[in-house]
Length: 270
Length: 302
Image 1: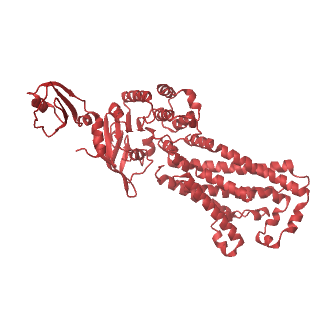
Image 2: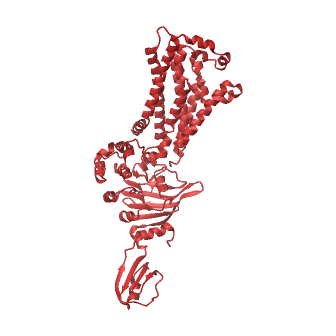
Image 3: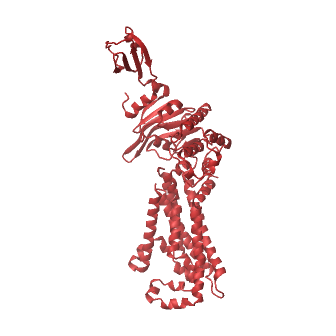
């Protein structure tokens, strides 16, 4: 009952952000189908592949997979802007708990017979529901776009590939939400919590990027959650390595656990 | 279980690094009491209230609400509390009605809608206002909403942090009338306040904190009696006499035909001293609680 009330209130607080993000990201998936159709119609995929320098192929072995209709459609799941937007959304949701402390709303809630773990569980549920909703609607957008705009006779991306990309992206997003929640559970200012989580995400993204391009940095890149979203491999039809899911799930579970621990022990003070 | 006191605080300490916000505070508030918790800004009032609500964790010591440990039995303790914070921390995009429904739903007793309506009438907050977003509320309206959210579930214990801050004088009177009703019902009220006249009007007992330490714990009546009385003696003609004043008497001002004295304790000796003089009038001002409390605030009390 109390959880339901808190969830409903939290949903009201974030609904416009979620609706706007979902519309943008779902719309982007549909747009990718339109773009792929346009390129397909001019038969430009083969030309683009031919123009690609060998060092790029070597640096990003899966890039060739993007240069096809189905690859272009799937790009909506690993485009930097999409990953960045989902990470930002997850950080926003994860640090909502900090804004409640900052504004004093937590005082009113926790002055009642509401356990602190209930507030953290509410944040986790909101995060999970939001990620499932956004990524789920992205998938729906992809298939709706394909149904509406795919040229006749062209090969659609296999459902299993889209599912793998969406699942891995969703788990990655959830991991960042969990990290942000853990950071936010210990802090008093949402701005500071968001900035720390955001900078951490950017650092990890760059570390992964450098790790992919520079062998010497590769061992260090293993600490980056982005390392465990091998989008090009998934695009080629490979299944998600169980290690990747285990690492991301591990980060998520540990961060959730840390959030419970930190929020239970902290002083609730503005 | 610690007796049946509404609030029981034992040797409470709260430190933030090297700063001690509350030091060895021991305090008991009986069920049915209206208790004033006083002190200057930073004296430790809000810190103590937040420890009672388990929002802050005490460095040492214990606090109980109706015998329930605020730390280990926090849910049971808070199930009996209605709380008004010093500042209503609510998001401006929520509507007043949503805030009341949410906070009422999270409370133990559930909302008494008939009572909520009565409170809204008493505090002159029309039902139509509840449909508006909080960003459209004035400070006074937010305060009224805060009072309603604290009272609407009819808790056994009310903890109010500066309850009349932002209320106009008419609404302050309405609030005092509500407190009188609650007192009549035997409910307990624990309020911090800066408004000494308010404390004098509504409280049975007061505690004064200074720099985190309890410096006065007394009934309002006894505290008032600690105040020196101002006595003005007018003579029908000029008087030269210079009596030897007892140690608790101080001559504050003197003209040819008037004396103004500050008297602590009994007035009997004054009558003896004045017996041979041409006294025209004797005016004794009621002792004011404010005079006592200000001394304690400043640390100049004996």
